[in-house]
Image 1: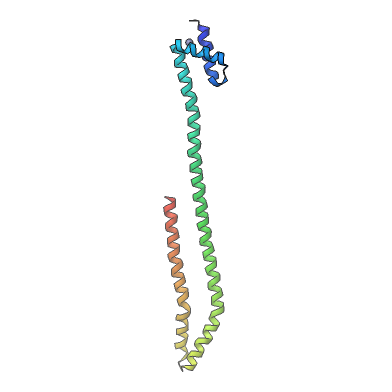
Image 2 (image 1 turned 90 degrees about the horizontal axis):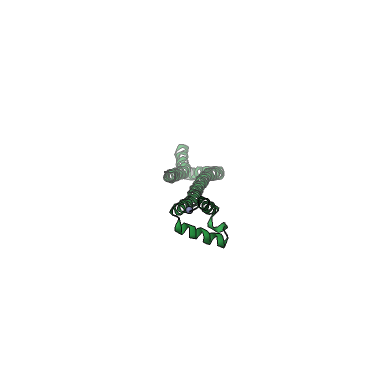
Length: 159
Ligand SMILES: [Zn+2]
């Protein structure tokens, strides 16, 4: 068989079957039926093209997936941080406001109770302190528990 024919066949294979005219494709198929070395070449070329196509696709998919996961994780962490910050701010505002409003009223209430019950000042003042401090204690306990819960979920999402 002519050496130019093999050369021509390999050039046609390199072009890819989709870019060939019908007559050239039939000629190439006829040549590949007869010629084992060009058939091997065609198979190698096909394998090469297929691996070229599949490798970047697989890399793209995994890259996209890991990027999406990282972005989502980062967004979650940001949101948790913002929620915690919001929680702290809100609790500060609520505690501050409620203290500003209720402390003078409570003080007067306890003073009135102490006077009408004929109890000495230290006694009703201690009662006022206990009553005044208990919501803050409860709130701090709740926020402490919630803070621990938030750090727990952070830890599991990171690992
Ligand atoms: Zn050949």
